[in-house]
Length: 178
Image 1 (cartoon, rainbow, N blue to C red):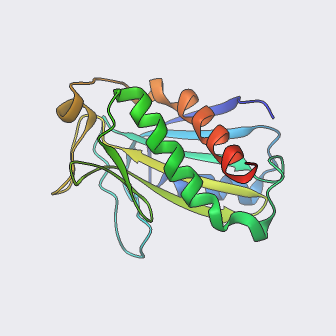
Image 2 (cartoon, helix red, strand yellow; image 1 turned 135 degrees about the vertical axis):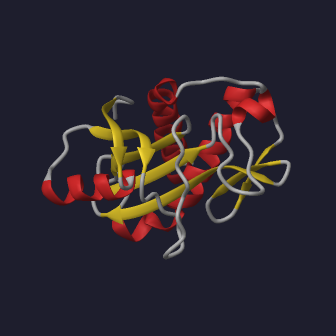
């Protein structure tokens, strides 16, 4: 499978995952897709009713990945969130050159016990919608941090989309085909 992703840029959306799920319900994709928004007005977390605060400047992206192209059946998707978490951790370690980044199961990435990133995985088989939020310059909640404050690292959201996608696909493949 090619590590290419088609990118849709949005100034604002309710939730990148909701946007992606609407696309999945009404389309058949030949390539994987990333939806990157500058701002979400109704970003959400894993638990019902938990909002993901989404100030401009951070990374809000949902990836639509065709699992059947990766030869992953619906009954095998139980490992997917773990594979994504480990891939995101690996990506952030690579980006920051820091081993301080750790996984908090089921869906958070922490630095010094503060939230740096989170994921929301939703399955609409054969597609996985993988929402990822990374605090780049803002820490919107208490007990959160961001790449700028923690690592003195300034990156723009659009700089992360393609490389993170490659880490996700490689990590998912590695998890399922060791």
